Amino acid sequence: MIELSSHVRCDIIDYAYLTQQCAIEPFQAKVQLTVGDTTAVSCVTKPIAVRFGPAIGHTLAVSAQLWAQACHSSDGEGDITASNDEFQVLCDPSVCKILFPLM
Image (cartoon, rainbow, N blue to C red; front, side, top):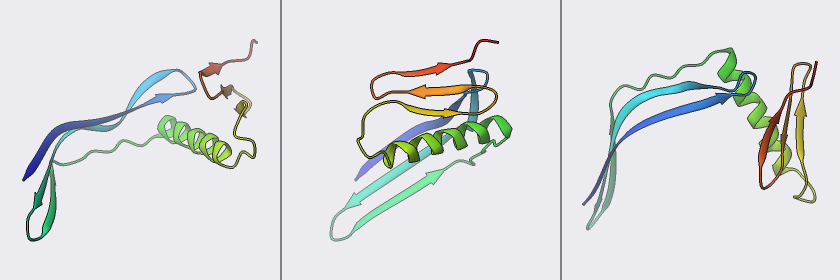
């Protein structure tokens, strides 16, 4: 039997203000793997609290758009750019940059 116990938390960086947002509150999780005549996996967690608001929704939408663009890129190289009226997010394969236009 193998047992793993951990505290889990998920933070997201808000692209608009470069602040860290807690998307999933810390919770305890325990996973057990039993191997024998049959293999069994069990997972037990404490209650999980998920936060979702405009900042987290926007960041997830932009990230999904960038990942979709990267996955559908024909050459697989070069910069990926997403923009709207407020800011631009520029990423390349080796370094991710967040650039804001000068007013």
